[in-house]
Image (cartoon, rainbow, N blue to C red; front, side, top):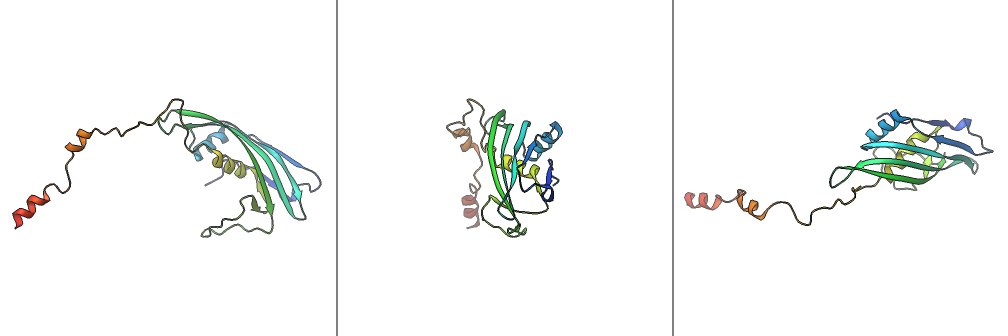
Length: 173
């Protein structure tokens, strides 16, 4: 699936002697595509700011802040629930790390990323947003019922799958 927010910085163009600041604020169209990808009702605001600086002989360190306003459906009522998100993002890009193959599952340090020819700030922002979304958003006052909604009487009216088996077995004897 195509990245709805592709904002790449070429590593060759980064200055090793100073901070390389970035300020990524997607427009309404890009926010709508991100909202669709993350199954949000709306993404009224999103901003990713920070800097990338040289770290050691051949690594790059990214430090930034992702802030956003997201609207998700309530897990109880499906009404819109608005949440404010603010997340610090810190990553190291190293040429000594390789991307895992499709079939591989590697549980290494999730703050170290492979260094390629570019650093995709958009992909980093979307991943950080997806990892910080509330997993069970609830509207104010939304409560799950204490008991199941099925009536006990309704249970008695349902046909029993083996109710006629005893009668059939008597007839076969």
